[in-house]
Length: 364
Ligand SMILES: [Ca+2]
Ligand SMILES: [Ca+2]
Ligand SMILES: [Ca+2]
Ligand SMILES: [Ca+2]
Image (cartoon, rainbow, N blue to C red):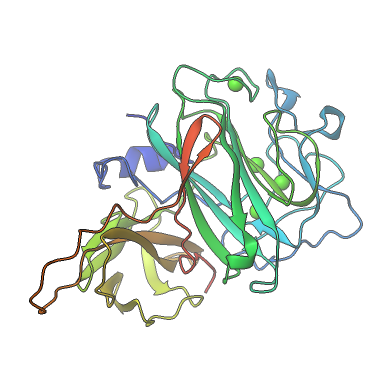
């Protein structure tokens, strides 16, 4: 099985350790972030023009539409909605792979199977914004140096204008999981993740947009020395129960000095309580209710390695809810239906979302 990974060390070290078999739902949410604890929340370059992608355009035998001369996808405003912690602004595409703030998209999943794209959607004024943010993903499954068409397994325009109502996003950063079917090659490929405000993209991955961010990723990035992961991944429990997840370091990574719950979430809310013991977090589900459904949640955390380098990530959590126990003696109501997961069609792929408002990896 081929995994999406950003890092050869992760491939080497973690495959044997992670819980891989959870019906292909999550495999590893632990992928390198290029941005470690950035304090750069807003674009700093003033007077430049756009945020571009940085996939190779006319070099390395590859012709992704990145440069202005190729009408590469670009966004004019970068401080309303963007991906991850930060975004750059430049006159033209930073060739090749020189954009310092590609930090808001992750792909997780096996070749030719249902896979997940995680988009960290960052908005400036939660609660005060209106409009629709569109999420798009282009992946060069057939490795011909372009995004377009499809291979035998998946379409290269993998996520097609997945709509996010930004007026409903109550946190600065929310995590959206979009499901798609991956193509055959899921390593050594280029992909583009994009968010655009109120404007849809098309299959060409080109054009000028008023607001958003374009992130291009190469799945063969230089190995990183810092990897933490969650054990188990995901943490699965029934409503009303509590379970513990431990943050561990990849065997080839620097060792962990300490971990902490992200300061962006409250340890205790009406749904759950998170307590920490060393490198472990115990998640206690408080809500016991129906209908039957799986509610996604997460435990965002920061980690410090022994040499002082910081990192953030999150552990996915799934809470099974069932009908609440009842003592009233009367005919049972008709059993509830399937989990209330919004499913919508995105082009030729089925997409599904679990907005995880509190699942916000962030700097402490
Ligand atoms: Ca960019
Ligand atoms: Ca970014
Ligand atoms: Ca890049
Ligand atoms: Ca292609």
